[in-house]
Amino acid sequence: LYSFLTVALHPLTVIKIRKQVGVTTPELPTSIISSSESVIKSNIHQYYRGLGVVISLAIPTRIIYISVLESSRERIESNAREIILNPPASIAKYNNQLQSLLP
Image 1 (cartoon, rainbow, N blue to C red):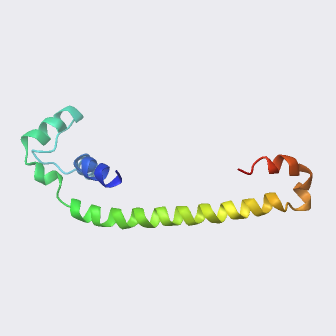
Image 2: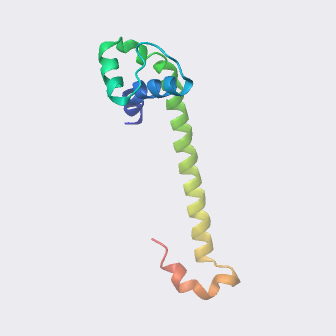
Image 3: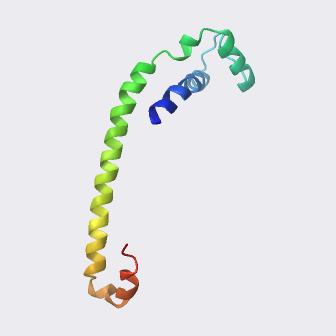
C-alpha cells in the first residue's frame, strides 16, 4: 500500500517541487486545474523520472521505521507492565487503578 501510494503520488510531488524551486517550463502550469491538463498533454514519463531512486530509498526506510516502531513498542509495553505490576512507593496508592490498565 505504501509503495503504491508513493508511485501514485510521485507526479504530484514532482509538480510541487518544480513550483517550489521556480522552474519555468512550458509543461509547468500555474494552477492545479491546468496542471492536470498539462500532465495529460505533456509526456507522462517526465513526471516519473527519478521514481526508481525514490522507491529504492522508500522501501528500506519504511522497513527500518516499522522495525524501530515495533521494538520501541515492545520495550515500552514491558516497562509499563513492570511498573504496573510492581509500582514504586510514590504511586502504590493507585495500584487498583493501575491494575485496570492491564489487558
